[in-house]
Image (tube, rainbow, N blue to C red; front, top):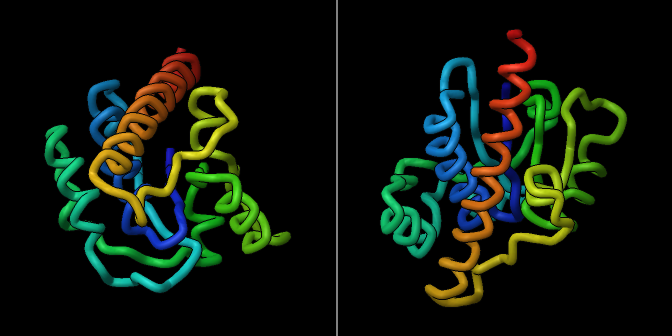
Length: 159
């Protein structure tokens, strides 16, 4: 399974989702054969580390995302990944537009796909530490649910 998390600039929500999902997937025994990455729909922060507040909230929960670097989604990603999850509705709209007709991946809203909740993970960029913690909680819930869904598919596929 190849999963790509996408937000606007790839420095807040999607790097958190990448790191948290890696941890949840490992707990669920999904690490083997799993590829996880993150990207942004824009290129403003390409090459930059995640926002220091995202790094800090991840670290408080035992996850190190400090070595990640932002990148913009590419057309190749729509063939390289099975599942591309946008952090908010606008990301999903942008992803659908970028993918156009040349897409092999499933594009969906992160929380919608993972938990069935059709709501956004709020962008904490212009907020404070509490906003980053709230984003982390939403991402943790979504990552835990997504890992459980994928673990269920894996066990059904192999049995």
